[in-house]
Length: 87
Image (cartoon, rainbow, N blue to C red; front, side):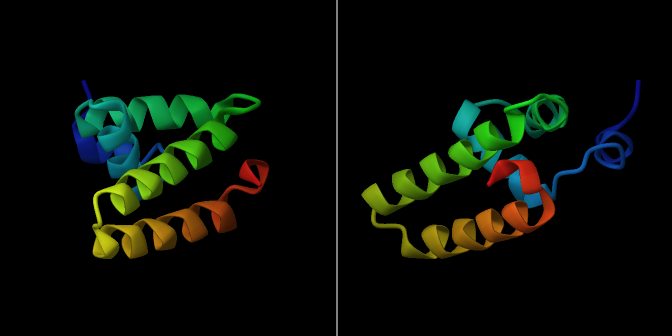
């Protein structure tokens, strides 16, 4: 079995993107890493990850967490820059 860092080396997502998936899906980061990696290989998976990050932004706004909103906007911008199928 590979440790987290070994799995991370095989995944095209950043740590922040993985954390956004983990938060949204209420799962540990290792599960989010596996899910994110799988989604990056599917036809609409990158669009689903984009939606996950946007949902997290909306949740942070609803809770008045402006710092988290700003952080997630950076995560979304990075994700869109790195994953052209997400647009």
